[in-house]
Image: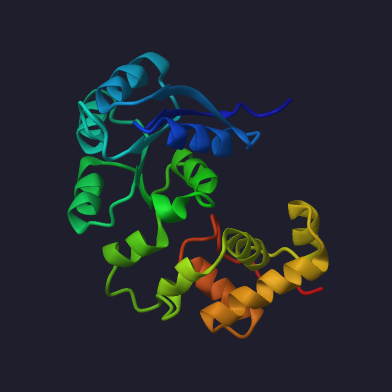
Length: 225
């Protein structure tokens, strides 16, 4: 018997963004969007009616912004799990979101690949942030790799290959899971390593762990073909 899908309420005032995010979420068998709204006020109301497992919410919305909506939702349902999406990388927004009790903060420009994993992580009771947000929350973290800020130079496919290899998959397994050739995997892998100035698989693993690209990084060592 299949496990129950994680239910998601999606709040964003841009219809085209909602459609894209809904498609991304629903492409995962274990995730399901059960409601969509375009304002913060509608998000507050829908959260009461639908009781979703996770609320994915834009910060900048009309009538009531995502931060104020977060405050109102958590005031009546403190166990609600809210993931904020934002085009803004602003310390004030980030700090307020965390103070209010949001479980995560993803920057829209870098959230597409991480969104599904972020929803699962939050549903499991753990917080998650875009790598660049994480670096702002922990500016003095000594083990943050010097290459961290270069994540934006990678393509979506290069990031996906990086995550899977760092998570322990062989090139062949990555190729099968992404429906591409092993040679293509090797090409994406080498491109990512060149851009990040990393020269071995162990370095890729350390990078992925420090940048939050692995959901459960502990004790997973990559294999080689």
